[in-house]
Image 1 (spheres, rainbow, N blue to C red):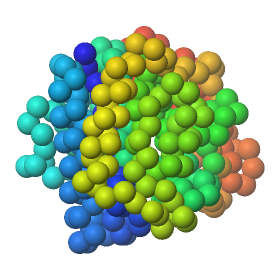
Image 2: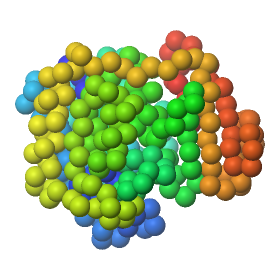
Image 3: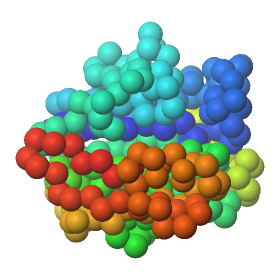
Image 4: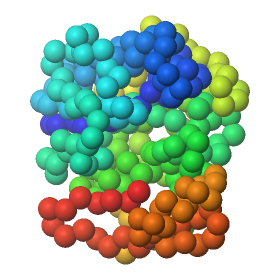
Length: 264
């Protein structure tokens, strides 16, 4: 069995503000958050290996793609780091059996979603595929589903776990905190959540044969509503259709065999 893990930082236990996420600079709080992230990654790899997974490939999916403390990574995992990527899911192919989303956050506009946003915390407001509003959980579930691979586990705050369950009814979730606002949460200490995540991994792997990929109909209608008109201007210049001052749209056909799906 082969498992692909995609990580984010905002949904890691103990992370509650943008200083920790490194949005406005890489200070001490960001360094602490990197360690929390690396510990959760190692816990996932360890749980996968204990369950008999042959290969675990972990994608550093937050911002620059260089957030793991590489010298502390679990020796039995494989890792994708760095920027300037040609594909959203580097290293993924049709041979993987399941995908884990580690440390994810709720879509933009989610009340009490810790650090809620979709792609850009400053620019995007609403994202839809075929009329369904979704965040990064949905976007990445589509990319995995295009390859017939199910999302088996999502971890993060209670808001993203609810969002994941509504979109992917079979998915396992592990809530590591409950948001009281965008930058305030009741957390569970990392020493406990790491054990919870490990159990969630094993439970998800035990149910993997019953989980279905999230597949969309083509041609797909993708819409993005932005917070300001200048962002929409940029997308219009790059070939998107202007719907109104802050919204653009494009129609995405099913890619030819061997091509990647691009939905944002």
